Image 1 (tube, rainbow, N blue to C red):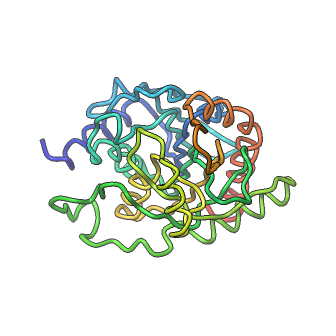
Image 2 (image 1 turned 60 degrees about the vertical axis):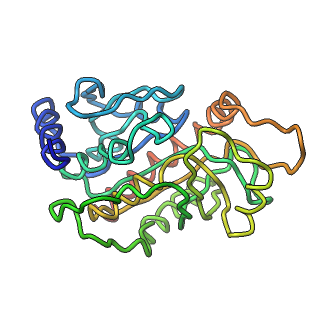
Length: 276
């Protein structure tokens, strides 16, 4: 079955389960799945029930779609995502984004946990992504289906400036300090060497992670507006013997999750009032 037919089959299945038409979708990154718990009037669909959806195998990713209302806005949250390092193809990793588009989503909010490269950053900082550097396989490689998007989509300005400015305004209103910077995407699952991190700093990356970029590329292909933010879960220290662990990442994100959730909820409210 061709990818387009798989997308339609998955979309039709979901539409049979819901009576809602979400305008905003949120992809919850590692340790940030609790944001979906704030959604009211929930309808939950586990990934394993949806045709052609993959199953997340990573700790901190629950594996379900949560539909409902958040601050008066119809939303859907992906409580957990898929990663290339789990053994999925890039088409499988980004499949949900294409389904979300056909559920009438207009804005995609992407969150992640990332390692900080900028020496001015601290663990727990929230960084608005203004651009990215892609060192992962591009999910658009292969034959292009014009029903999904054009052959050569532009990536210039994909992190929507209006949405970024609204989020920064929301942060200021809530007296929460946020950063802005460039996200560098790697396949993982191994963490970076010190030499790699020094190189990434020199080419302009402020943080590094193992997700987000493929989803954003496909969102650009589909014509979605994108906002993305990282929670800085650890800081690069250029010393031998400093070891990064996934449990430490989850712990750091957990401590920052209250502010992240508060910001996203108020951002949604401002979206409802100012844009949608």
